[in-house]
Amino acid sequence: LLPDRLNMAKGVVVSEKLTLDISRETLQQSKILRVIKTNLVMKCPEMSAEIAEKKDDYTNLYEQLCKCLKLGVHDDSTNRTTIAELSRWHPSKSSDEQISLEGYIDRTKEGPNDTCYITGEGIAAGSSSPFLETLRKKGLGFMNTVDPVDEYYVQQLKETKAEFEPLTKLMKEVLGDKVEKAIVNNQSH
Image (tube, rainbow, N blue to C red):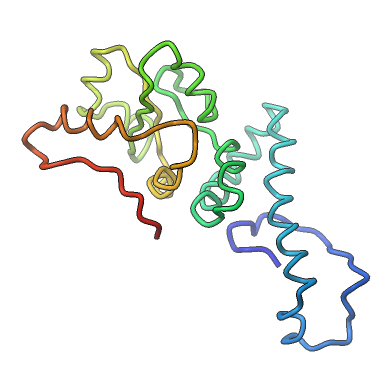
């Protein structure tokens, strides 16, 4: 009933409208089953949001399920905003804390409206990137994206409050003649 990205969810679905005496093919084409699937897919982010209210519980849950959530942003356009709100990032100014994208944006309200991020194999690798020298000189922070799925994730965040467009201008400034142009790719995979 659930997509692969929600393989962590386990449970029993009880429905009086589904009979047990039908073939698998008939069951797969059932409208009722599609409705149940849709409801279950919508319920998973809702339940995660309830857990997110308890920071310690959510930190443990997020460590286990972060890749599943991030794949959800890529795969599930209907629930993309809800799932994006559940994701956590490592801000440059706090190495051991993870915050939501909205939390990061709220912290940077006083500065420029740019949301900057660096992709690396880990927090240390990303933070030591020479591309960040200009940001540091300007006193700007950035988000560390450390999972391989993060690059796909960021591409799907077109609808969030953060705007990644100004990042391309900064990248062009930093890289100068080494690149012809820097663009945000809005293409879906």
